[in-house]
Each structure stands twice: as structure tokens, then as C-alpha cells.
Amino acid sequence: MADAQFVNVGKKFDKVQVISDINLGIEDGEFVIFVGPSGSGKSTLLRLLAGLERVSDGQVFVGGRDVTFAPPRERNISMVFQNYALYPHMSVEKNITFGMRIRKESRNAQKNALARVVKILKLEGLLDRKPRQLSGGQRQRVAMARAIVHTPDLFLMDEPLSNLDAKLRNEVRLSIMELQKELGCTMVYVTHDQIEAMTMADRVVVLDRGRIQQVGTPQELYHSPANQFTASFIGTPGMNFMQLGRKNGGIYLPDGTPLTLPPKLEHQVLKNGEVVLGLRPEHIFVNHEECRAVGGEVVGDQPFVSLGARIGTREMLGSEFLIHTGEENGRLKFRYKNNGTVPKTGEQVNLHFSLANVHLFDDVTGQRLN
Image (cartoon, rainbow, N blue to C red; front, side, top):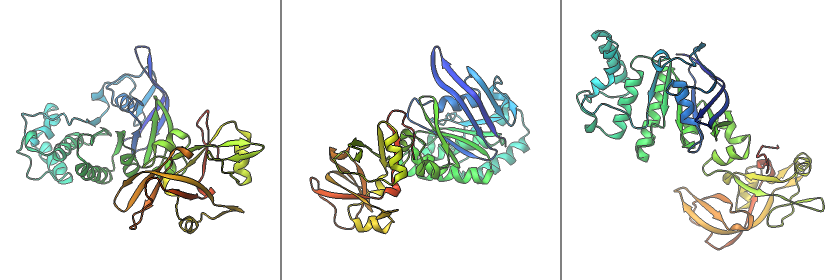
């Protein structure tokens, strides 16, 4: 296994800059996920690491070796693609060992390697089947087996679960996590699904428009987003945002409710221009007793904040509802326990939140202020 490093990496297609000034280190044995919306550059960055695309600027290192201009075959990297890329006329066994046969490895080496990956990925009984006789999840496991059969330095995966249904995604996601832990391999994984990123990775790299927005553990991204983009992208659903108003030296919520912030937060608001308040859906409550129960009533000498809202769309998610409010405060989202009663659409309610859970962002740069 090996570490990897991007140093000042950029990539242009013709005159279009798609990757800009990427500096990132990936440790030996680490599971790192690139996440971001379509067009953010995450797959391009993975292809630069694999050698399938050539960098326009900067350097790429694998295991301390400069591989910036090395072809893929010299990087000892295996890659699993979104479409599996299995040979339809070959059996599972021949698909897995294809690369070993091309490299003219001995039959004994092929047999031992095949037995190892078949056990790891639970492919017993499938070796004589053709890809068309397999389920989507089985095909993905075959593609993974082919990738790891020769123990690569880096194991790369490009949106491997996007073609699977929800149940299979959960099953294969668990298989990938178990595989990475069992092998102790360095894995770099690309997805647009932040749930995959948050549940699987040791560290997550959030990308937008070809630039890194934040790198950190799932917990760091959730609790301390560096900017508004990360706050909106990480979390299910993303963070709520409210534009704060200022008048006569006071600070107000969008509906005109005065907001008394602790001195440190108030200073951040007053010294900046336009400021946006961020609040996660799970930190908003209809019942102020619930807000108090999670430490929401007092922050220093400040009470919890209450504001009026009109109930809009309700989404039933099993044990809870996700409720959307009207436009009075910028269409807030909050979670509500499914305990037999739920506010009705059109009903006016008071929502409560703690200042301890507030995030502040500069409305121009999007950067976090507190």
C-alpha cells in the first residue's frame, strides 16, 4: 500500500480550467472520499491520480514517487468504474484473473489470488457464471475482486454504487467498508452522494467548481463547516440559512424578530457586512421543552430564540417528519418526531432554537465567521 499527494495540481481542457491549485495528502491505509455536485471536478481529480488524464500544472506522487507523467501501468493502481466494465463473454473467474493472465503470472499465483478475493467478497458459487447471470451487486463485487486481485498500491473507485438500487447500495457500501478495513488498503472513492461520504470515509474532500472547499473527518464537516457551500452540501437535508438584518444597532431575523446574541457572536455580525445565520434542521424544535432538554434554553445569559412560522410541506420519513415552512423566514426545514401528532399544513407554530447551535457566514465570501 502507499500514500498519495497532489501538489499545486491544475487541469485544463482546452482553455477551460476544471481543476485549480489542488494540494492534498492521502495517508497510507486511509479511506478518502471526494464528494461534490456534478461538474465539481471529483472524477477528473481521480483520473489524474490514476494517470488516465495528464495534469496541466503541478505534480502527483504515489508512495513518495513522482508519477506526474507516468502511464497508468507504472502506478500500480486499480480502479473500479461506475459501469463495472466486465467482459460479457468471460466467466466471473476469467474476469477476475484477466489482468494476471495478461501479465503471464503463474497458474498457482492466479489460483491463490483468486481464492483470497473470492473469500473476501463472498463470490463462492459464482465463478462459472457470465456477467449477465449476476445481479447488480454481484457484478460490482466481481469488478472489485478484479481490482484487488494483485494487491495495488492505491484502490480507486469512481461512483461505484450509482447504478444500484437503494437496498443494493446499502449492501455493497458495507462490503466496500469491510473490504477496505480487512485489506488495510489506501482507497480513494468518488461520489456525489454525501450520505456515502459521511458514512464510509476516514476523511472527506468537499469539491466545488474544481477547488477544495474543505477537508476533514465527517464529524468536522458536519459540526464545523468552513463555508456556506459545505454547510449546505453536508447533512441530510443541508443547513438552513437566514439573512440577518441590522437596524439602529440591533440584529433581526427575517421576520423582524430581534436577536440578542452573545457578545462574541454579536461582534462578528456587527463588524461584517451582510451576515447569514445557519441552523441545522435537527436543531429546530416546535416544543420549547425539547429545546431546553438539549441545552437550548441558556447560552451564557441568553435565552433560546423563538420565531413564528407557517407549516408547509411535510415529508414522512418513518420515525420522523421533515417539515418545510413558508417563506417568512426563508423556507426553513426541521425534523419532527413521529409521535402520533404532527403540525398540519398551514398551521402557525413557534419554532425554537439554541444560540449554541448557530453558525454565522459572510454573505459575500460564504466563509464561516464563528
